[in-house]
Every structure is written in structure tokens, then in C-alpha cells.
Length: 83
Image (cartoon, helix red, strand yellow):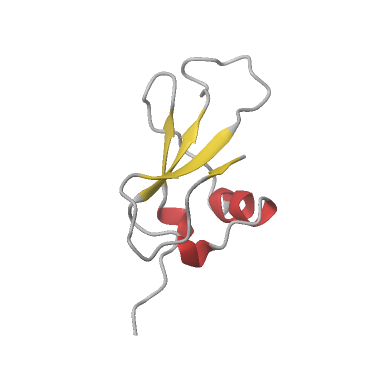
């Protein structure tokens, strides 16, 4: 039996400057749950893109995010979620 993918391992990147975005432990899991994304539909081809980060937009109160799959799987129903 294959082990489920840990959503906390998703890479988070700023879509503006390309820098990695570091979140607190559990933030990814909470974000996915808030938006109703089933973690079982995610795998190592998925990542989260933020519309900004503290490096390029330090004064922003928050940033929109989007979960994307870099290479679609033949059997994967997940097509991406904009949050």
C-alpha cells in the first residue's frame, strides 16, 4: 500500500519574485482544509504559488495562493485550486 503524500511537503513559491515561501508547520494543511482540497489528490508534482511574499511585498496584509500540478497525471482528478 502506497503511503499518502504529506501536504506539508508541498513547495510554496512566490509567483512574483520566485523566492521560496516558508510557512509555519501546519499552515499548508490548514489552508488546504479551509478551501476543501482533498490532500489525497495531491502528490510530489503539486506546489503552491503565492501572489507575493515578504521579500517582494513586505507591506501586504496577506497573499492569494494557488495550488498547481506541474505535470498532470492520467488518473488525477485534481486540476488546481485558486485560493
